[in-house]
Length: 137
Image: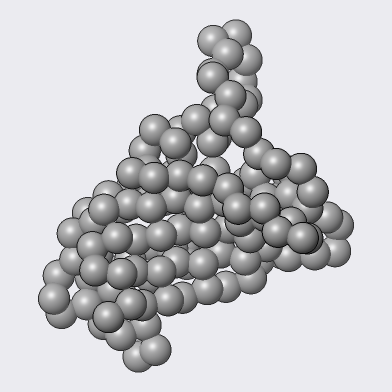
C-alpha cells in the first residue's frame, strides 16, 4: 500500500521550518522509525533551495512525501526556471552544500524538468512499524 501527503508552502524563509515540521509529523504518523535526521535535513535543504532559487515571487512550492513499502520519497516542486546542480563543497565558502548533502544522505536523488518548473526528489530506505497510522486519519 502506498501513502501520500503533500502541502504547499509560501515563498518565505519561515516556510522552511513549517516544511520540516510537516515532514516529521508525517514520518511519525506513518510509523517511520529511522533516518529522521537525514530526512529532516534534506527537506530543509530542498525547501530552502526552492525559496531562494526556485519559486518566483507570489508563488508557492509543493512538498510531497510518499511511502511505498520501505521507500520514502521526498519531492519539492517549484515553478522556477533553471536546473539545480550538485556542486562540490568549497572549503572557503559558506554556501553551495545543500544538494551535495542531499545527494550524500539520500539513497537516490534526482531532478525532473517540467514545462514550467521542476521537481527535486530524494528517496530514503526507512524502517516502518506496522502500526503506523493512515495519513487520512
